[in-house]
Image (cartoon, rainbow, N blue to C red):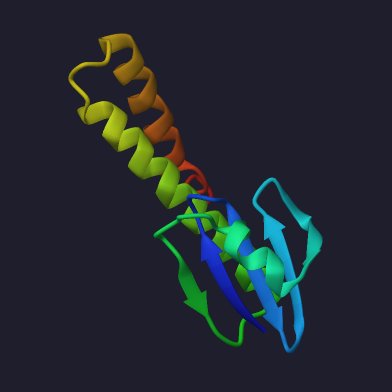
Length: 108
């Protein structure tokens, strides 16, 4: 199976022969059947597309989570760097970023 992933859109398009389905980060276990006519609308103007070939569903789910986490981290960093935002908002972004960066590392 081949896949196209967007972390910004939290979506993966699975291509298995002629069969197209998408999964979304908030509903990984609920694939949505797609048609080729859906493709222009699925990712919109996202410019963070990643292509993977010959992957399993578990690999797709892991890559989608990683892509979403990367986009979340980027957005939080941009908030931290925005001097026009209040210090309270920037502190909340710093806490959320720290949580995101340490998520899953406690088990190691």
